[in-house]
Length: 132
Length: 176
Image (tube, rainbow over all chains, first blue to last red; front, side, top):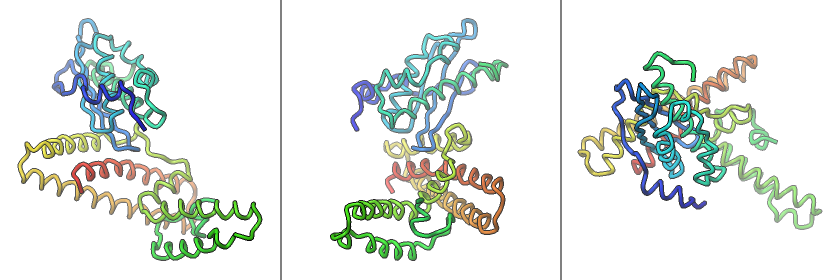
């Protein structure tokens, strides 16, 4: 199975790899994993408290090329978005953008889950744990 | 016909792999195409189908982890990413980060050894846990426990199994 050009591009030049300080009150961290393949993905967002806009995003993924590309793309997309807009990103958008084959769809699901987990973590830090 | 039925076995996890191999060879002979050269086309097709099923069944049942995965699939249980414990993910992430340094050559020899020992230890604990839970499953089945009890144990096995691919990947990345 061949990777699409976009997957290869993100895999070779991943955007926003790294970490943000986990304890920073303005940083939300999402750590998710897919038990089928053993991938683990960390996605962090730094949110401007005033505007609710995601100013920065970082990721680190241990997994296959599609998982790395999905999370790389996710950090690109969430930057500059409000939390609400970030939550509206669907895994199907990622599948479409990266032309992921059916067997790699779970990688995009993982990236969507990571965004949601990061937003939830940020909200928890700001006393708004349950609603999205 | 499920894989257990192919071998005439109950849906239990404690399987004597030597006996399994023996039955596999016997059944392979029984369905071998050579014995069906004069058979009708439908019998021939049936024999080929049985051979394929038999091969799949043997490959699955002889492997203790794949055996559990298969049993779970028969009852509609499968690893669920929303149920992977956060503590496990954190641990796996941390080990992966350390592993990255070891592979990148920036870590000390001691660090590489200690990581190797840690992954080995995780494997040992996983195997023991899976074996124990498998034994418990067999006991529940043998003593005819109600469905609720069985489902509880299937959920437990699913949870244990969710760690399997993480350990496998760590071992692979460590290079044996």
